[in-house]
Image 1 (cartoon, helix red, strand yellow):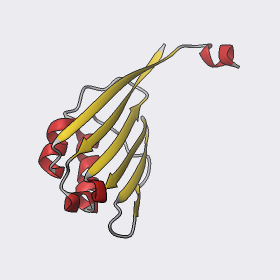
Image 2 (image 1 turned 90 degrees about the vertical axis):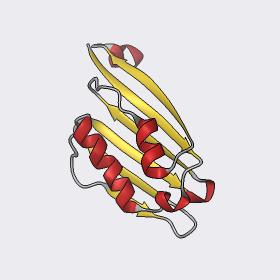
Image 3 (image 1 turned 90 degrees about the horizontal axis):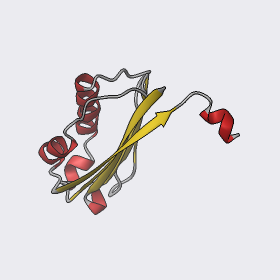
Image 4 (image 1 turned 120 degrees about the horizontal axis):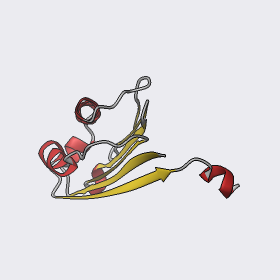
Length: 123
C-alpha cells in the first residue's frame, strides 16, 4: 500500500504587496523544499497577472506537485501541496503569518491512500 498526503491552504488578510512579490513566493517554495524535503523536477513556472492581480505558480515535484495562487486585490492566497509519500507536518500558519502578514490561515490535510487494484476495480 502506498499513501500520500495533500495540504489545501488558504491565507486571508495578507499584506497585498507581499502577494505580488515573486521573490517571497520563490522563498516559500524553497523553504518547503528544504524542510520537508521535496525534490523539484524542473524549474517552477510563474505567471504574473496585470495589477491588481497576483501570481500563479506551479512546480512539479518528484513527490507530486506544488501550486500557489495569490490575490492581492482580495488580500488572500491559496496553495496546494501534494506528496505521494508521507511527510511531516509543516507550519504553514507561522510561515504565512510571518512572510505574508496573514491574519488567518486555514489548513486542510487530506490523507490519500492508494491500494493495489483500486484503479482496476473502479474502471
